[in-house]
Length: 272
Ligand SMILES: [Zn+2]
Image 1 (spheres, rainbow, N blue to C red):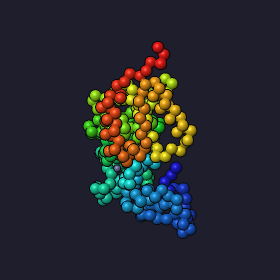
Image 2 (tube, rainbow, N blue to C red):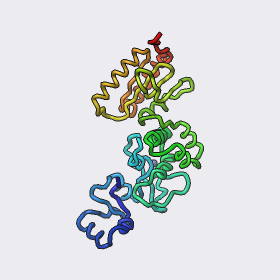
Image 3 (cartoon, helix red, strand yellow):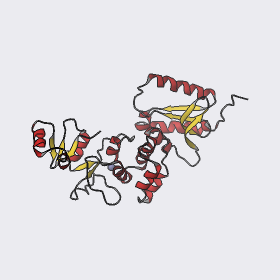
Image 4 (tube, rainbow, N blue to C red):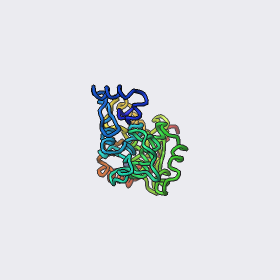
């Protein structure tokens, strides 16, 4: 879906100057910056990015491209002219930026900006979701970031495209510890695939969205928890809000469960 913000020159490829002047006169387009026009229903984030002298990039553009992005109020903008490109609040990529052709950077360009701009965990969340949602292949991800600095290469070693939500990725990254074996999307007979398995018996299931829209899924999740518990596992369910906004409260509680070795209990053999 287009953003509703266009370069004037691009519009003139498909309509005459007179038609464009008419469209501006009757409100179908308005000029938001010299050479840039927006429709009344244009994406407000894109309008803002272009109005301040840039284009939408990095996490903000990747959200539009379908990636799971950690929520933030920050608008990720890259300056589209050399005079404003180095503005400290704006995003830059490693190496020379490509020419601006659209109000929203394409996925590879936005990703290269995210690699430089975002904290590692937010960058890994995006990479996981691009792979999981089939928006990028693993080889394309490596190719796009092949020339990036070592810190980016290290972040790429943490990427796991099996992860089904950004919150699941965040928990996996935050629970990483040398002594903990954490596995992603583990299949358990009679239970199904669980988001994360810590050690041999601690299951962590993570809500990927803020609101549970599906009451049937809610019922199924609770039944799965019960089935897992009957098999000797310890399922822990974390909500979106707990991961995104209340992690400081959650982490000591998870630590307490691990201290009690809940993750080291052998599952019950139900078929002796
Ligand atoms: Zn950025």
